[in-house]
Image (cartoon, rainbow, N blue to C red; front, side):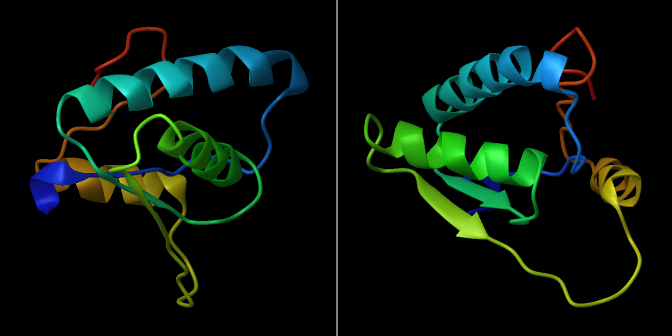
Length: 106
């Protein structure tokens, strides 16, 4: 399952002038990942990027019925996006930062 899973993390506030481009890039990236065999997509469920990612997965599910959305909820204090990304990299996982122009950056 680990090799078939993608998890999203990001900021709650997305600048309005960046929203449309980010949404397009996110959909392209998810579609690409589906083509690579990813079927499980996890999102935290917070407003902002988590919500955008979850909505995109749900919209793409109409075209790719095999994909699943997993909503995550963490009750421990602390953490944050930077912590999550650092931890993922430390575990050897691939991190794709859509805020950076070149996709596929680790």
